[in-house]
Length: 189
Image (cartoon, rainbow, N blue to C red):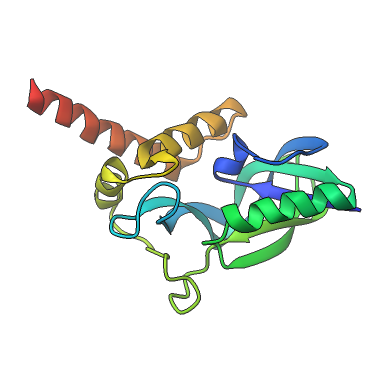
C-alpha cells in the first residue's frame, strides 16, 4: 500500500509522521489563503488564529510538499495522526501533484489533501476573507497550544522561500505582521 499526502501549511516543515519520500511540487487549480480559523493549535475558541486552506482558483498553483507513506501499518499511523491534527479541515480531495513547472503530466496522481471548506454548516472555524491589515492584527494577537500564530506565518514564509516559492499572499501578510510588530516595539520606546 502507498499513500501520498500533500502539505501546503505546517505539514511542509513538520510532518509529524514517518514517510519514505518527500517531494517539492504543486497542485493546480488552487491558491493558499489564510481563511481557516485555528482554535486548537494557533489560537483558542475565544480568539482563533488564522491558518491556511485552499481556495479554488482555476489559473493558480499551490506549492508545497508531498509525502509518500508506504505500508499498511505506516499508512494507518499517519492517517490516525493526520485525522487528529487536521480535524478542523472538513474535506479531503485527491489531486494530481506536479514537480516540474512545464510538466503536462503529474508526478503523482491521487495525492490526499486536507481542505477547510467555506461552508459554515460543515466548518464552524472558517473565517473567510478579510482586509489584509485585519488579518495581520488577528495573527499578531492570536496564540494557542502550538504557539503564537505569527510563528506559523513566518515558518510558512521561510519554508516556501527555501524551495523558491514566492507566495504573494503569504509574503504580503508576513510583511503586514512585521510592520505591526515593529510599530508596537516603537510605541513602547
